Length: 137
Length: 214
Image 1 (cartoon, chains in turn orange, brown):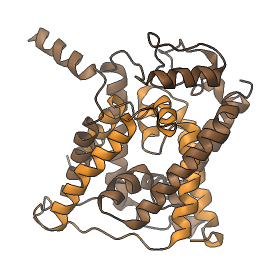
Image 2 (image 1 turned 90 degrees about the horizontal axis):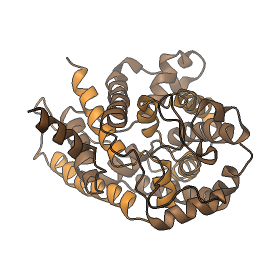
Image 3 (image 1 turned 180 degrees about the vertical axis):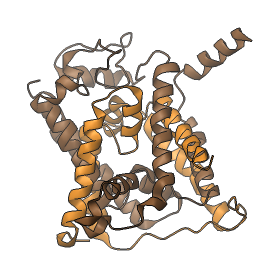
């Protein structure tokens, strides 16, 4: 039962993202051509509600299931990794029209070739781990 | 009751408006914080590498990945969510893009494939069930994988996603959603990188890549 709640969270997110068409490559092409508000609306409304929720947890108005305060960790301030990694991820995102979360949904929806896509993404993650010490962070 | 169930399914199956993004993402973040966890789906790629024994070769994968099991369950839930939404609540299964995007897609293809009364499907590809798509947009299928174009998009694109997400320390969920919601400057830099990289790819390279013989 412990794992069930996490499956439920993933289900809500996955189901919602599919119905919002955020999994659609065509929506991503549309977004990068600024031809519709749709994708920006999803991200902006998500971040806005997220801001409120994050504030409520940070100020202790909302507590975790154990009644404790949720700890947020600040991201390191080391710029090259965010710029270079961001550019590579963004190029991959636009090339495929799929981001790392969406490939799970697509695999589940019946497009079985995404198993290969997932394999390629794992290879990319492995390559980062391997070349990590030579990359500027 | 049966009719009510039918109506409910039909109601859910409609395309959702953009503001539902706030509901879905808000609920996801709230539940994860409530369970004392973080939102970040690409972290699962690192966990999967570690679970496959990559820690024996590369230190980056040497961590207690069993503590990340919950996140794999989130990914599994998302996979199941995709299955249910696509197969039982798919509605018309179309991407309801704008008329200008339809024109753009036809311009890229050099052919009038889509129209307002013939919208593109959600996924440019084929499954066992979903077979009717114009060959130009048949990107995500097994036969496409063995073409130059399919290889570039699926293998190289997938590689870039995995590499870039870990290099940047997060993907759309970790940086664009939870990072921005926590007003993290590094996340803003990363998201700017996502967008600049995406614009470069979309405007400079994507049309030519899509037109490679398939």
